[in-house]
Length: 250
Image 1 (cartoon, helix red, strand yellow):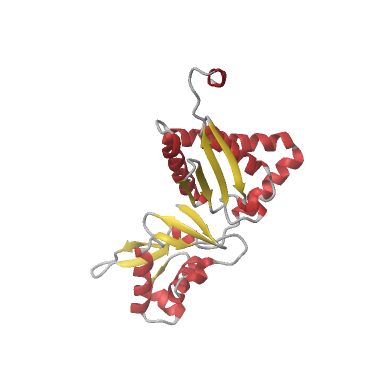
Image 2 (spheres, helix red, strand yellow):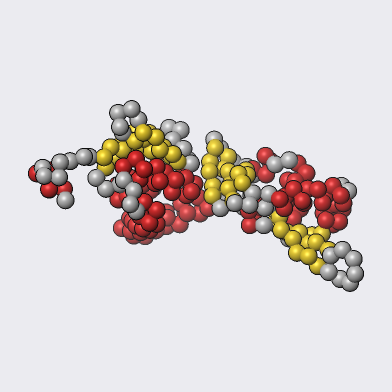
């Protein structure tokens, strides 16, 4: 499942359901963006766990056929699942429940939890906090290297943008007229943490540097500073392999 952020609303992507409104932290539930009938069905299933269409209809005061229409739409979006129960002859009974994607539409506060836990780490041992961010950076670099193997220059940056996009950063890359490449992240996937710990942002620069060897990287906008996106200007140095500078860098 992938998460994007548009303005103050997070968008969840799953292969089965496509883009759907999800939740952020304290800004209210994105269930408000769903049609009222489907929202009520999801909320009823969240409260009850599993229910048949007839019981959902009874709870909401709607017809059974109306409940089934909502459930069919939600199942098509990958937001509900069901089990077939057969008791004797006749049609099997369906018991509905929220899918993982459906459950993800309800409020989560992972950012607040992560920030709180990292605060305890910092208070106990500031060096341990740095190690935690370093380990995260190393893991991201390892994951990215497989995707970027064999790619160079702009194609390498564009593939890196796709990696970041899949991690929830709403990222893209474009080649500018002067040959520089601009990598833009329109969502900070760790914003709650980044606003409290500068290590999150410094490790982002180091992450890019590790995956783009030989590149000069300059951040020219920063979400934490109030910009609508984090953006990086990237230039690759093209040295003469016989020059003193190139030899020194190798």
